[in-house]
Image (tube, protein in one colour):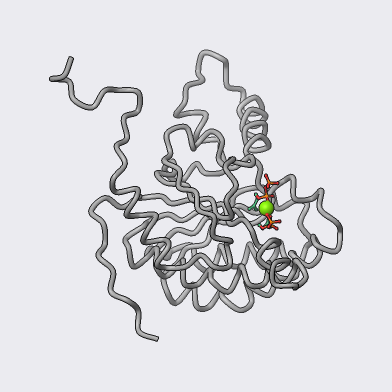
Amino acid sequence: MAKESLKIPKKIPTHLAIIMDGNGRWALEKGLPRLAGHRAGTENLREVIEACAEFGIQYLTIYAFSTENWNRPPEEIQGLMKIFRMMLDRELNNLHEDGVQLRHIGRLDKIDQELRDKVKEAIQLTKDNKTLILNIAFNYGGRDEILHAVKQLMEDGHKAEDLDEDLFAKYLYTADSPDPDLIIRTSGEYRCSNFLIWQAAYSEWYFTSTYWPDFGREELHQALTVYDQRERRYGEIQNIKDV
Ligand code: IPE
Ligand code: IPE
Ligand code: MG
């Protein structure tokens, strides 16, 4: 089907982050098992990634599995790991051809060897790609990231007086990405669920009731159109002349 032509808004976020939520409810409302929702939630990823490149976004971070998601039933966790493995097998070459550079944020140490190796291979294969940087937040938690950074800073022998925001940010998993300009959360939940808690200090948020498997290019465009209207003040005032 031909893509609808969409007017690209003037102000595009350099870094978009997405909390891909609602897979389970999408499935249950259709009388399907939750894992069918997780599978469906990988089918639309390609469209969203392509649309990000089309709209000029340079960094996309997607929340795929949180440090708290280990508290789900083992069958769901195993099913999710299998879906991630299959997704990498299916999509890696396409992503590489499209110039997507894959990165991982979070911890790989708790992940089984086969999947960990696949992730590392994908990072290695795509490391010179330039079209879009895709950070996959997988076994990621913002609090874990901050604690990890503090421990590394201490191990590297930094003193309290050395520490400032720039140095701290260099120790986060996202050291090589700018802070997200826009964060989208699908499925009608209004919380950050431990996602990018340091980096989101001045991010704009866009919430939609759409479940993640139904989120696509047009709704991404809608979110960007809303972002284009936002005024980011960073604690300042808009017009100094009004004082
Ligand atoms: C998001 O969908 C995917 C993951 C957290 C892995 P959910 O599985 O949280 O779906 P809901 O929120 O239960 O509908
Ligand atoms: C956040 O969604 C994690 C991911 C999307 C991977 P959750 O569904 O796990 O978050 P809560 O439990 O509703 O806060
Ligand atoms: Mg959820």
